[in-house]
Length: 282
Image 1 (cartoon, rainbow, N blue to C red):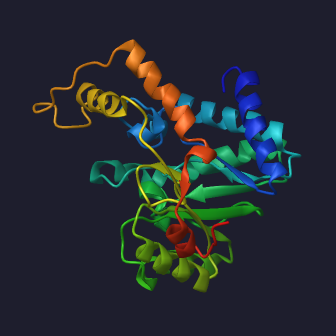
Image 2: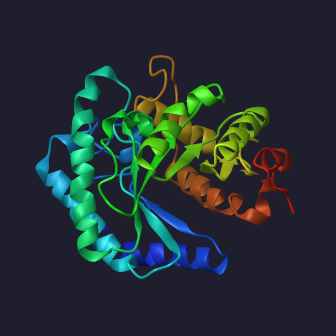
């Protein structure tokens, strides 16, 4: 987003598509300067430096100010999810829990300098799951979000968030879940509906998997690309891996084929998964 123009042009295009189909958009920061997780989901240097670096915090504020100034009058944009899944569950990183809400306060103050319209959305520590780090809403247009995976789909799994909502009379949203069986999706979605918690299940589209609304086929040479990435970046068993570097031609072909296979007309809809979400395939 440093250049602003190209980044906003891409976002504007996606938001335009959403508007045409009557959808709302929530803008989510996955890659905060310095890294809010230190994991591969934020392209950081392997550690959540955001909590140590005042410069990274200020850059995060400035980025959100530019985004908010650009979209402050856009009614298709529902709100701003300020930091995706901050602070992993590793014990040594819990030292940063106390710094999370103060950073949120900085970001919100920056946003409100340019945009008083849109809701700001705060996710808890430990992958959005821990609300004990919050002292309560500090802005009149604020919402809290939690993510939940691979747990029993029972009332105990969401009682912390329901209690937080009732205590502070503030909206909550289950912003990310999924990657499970149709039976589990049905149970968790029903639980959320019964507790009047809106939800978003992730992802919309997956490769060679029925645990999403839409499935697409594996591109050519994809296994070779993934195997080499696992070996080169330490994401697999490097001692046993014998993966060789794919050729430039094969790598290019893999990604070109990916762009073809992900098109809706080349994918297939999973009706049972849609049924689990309470929807009907057309």
